[in-house]
Length: 591
Image 1 (cartoon, rainbow, N blue to C red):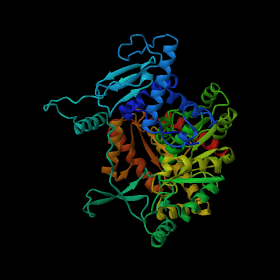
Image 2: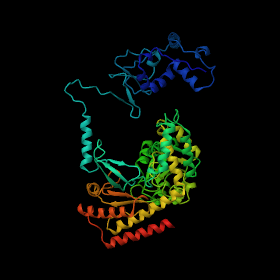
Image 3: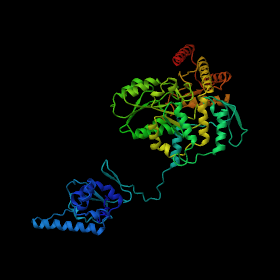
Image 4: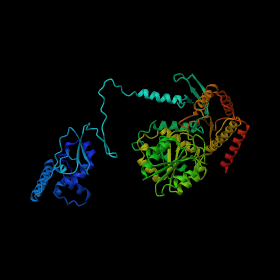
């Protein structure tokens, strides 16, 4: 059945915005008063196409003309007047402008420029006509408050200045400089063949104005970014396929390399399917947002230490969220108990925390989440490539991959490339592929990145990968032990990340500047908003390619600059306490 195109000769005086603003009130009043509206409403609400009343079946199959609508109005009005005359009842026509009692139908809102509505049926209905002075193209109705928001009328004053955008930006930047959270990027040029060393470029236009520095804060944890096989894969890929992907995954941007990488990642994590993104920030943001918005009535339970990418996706989804204390399983269960089991829930957390190096009790976390009917989203960004027999992360190390619903990981850290991904059931990944705007509406990764990532996974699963992981862990233990012996306030953790607590943003920055300027050692201070104010720290990451000589140079330099900025080294008792904690961590790792 083709519904009629109703063009009321009376309401056609209004603009589209005005009709939209008053549509519910017009329809409510019209259905009861107007034959066109009432029969149209019946046509919408019934499947019986033959009950057309005054509108014949033939007229319903095509748009009604203006004259036909007017004729129906006039005929119905004449009939009503005849009925009133025969019953000796004088018809009462209420004017819209003089009605004083509250209208049960609401209001029709028109601008002062419109003529009076002459519809005889709406005039006889209990509906109020309100005139307002406004730009009829910018009417905005706040339906929740049932108020009209009038557009701001520009001041007719040539002396009024426009908003000072750059002044605003300058002030916000100055505020960050005042609280020492302003970030100054160090210009570091990685050079093939000398990792973990690099070149500090002081002048962009002069390659000779540089010096060699030792990098202690790189997330290229295994040095795969300069592995000969990785470099060859990139060169071969650009030679064979060029530099770009050509489009989004849907529009000429899906190649066999994309599908091969996704298959490799799914196999690595023992999942049915995987989906790659331009970064893990995008993967986390897109996946959590899309799941939360798509699952009906979804709640999210988020670890308080979660990465900004996870927080962004959760925040943007605007679903109810519950924050549990970092790695606190008891608090998680306490919150889960308050949510009915039938309601969809996502429990989101990280295995290895990027800034304090802690590792969650993964299996217990998964068991508790599943006991209350939750879907688990686990960020393994700082674990993939570094833990487990094949480098699949903490889930593989702890033999619980089968319990993990959704795993997110990165190709830009231990795998030495760039990009992010999720792995899970084929239904889940297809859902994100079909609904996740962060995946759909972006250019896909180029062949050079895909080829290098595929090669990195192959290395990670090989004996060479396992050897690199063992050597990295040995260097981590050696460095941590020597830092503790030197009296530095090492924040104990069971992972490869070594944080040193400073507690002051200005001092943390000063320490790093002294290390770089005096000793050619590059460590980046970690300040707010990456960590909370008062918990500023140095974050050190040893690789398999750092030597014992480099470790000794770092520890010696740190001791000198630490005291130079007015900080004190810890005593023997503190060192012994930290050593005991370290031994406890090592035993727990081996258990």
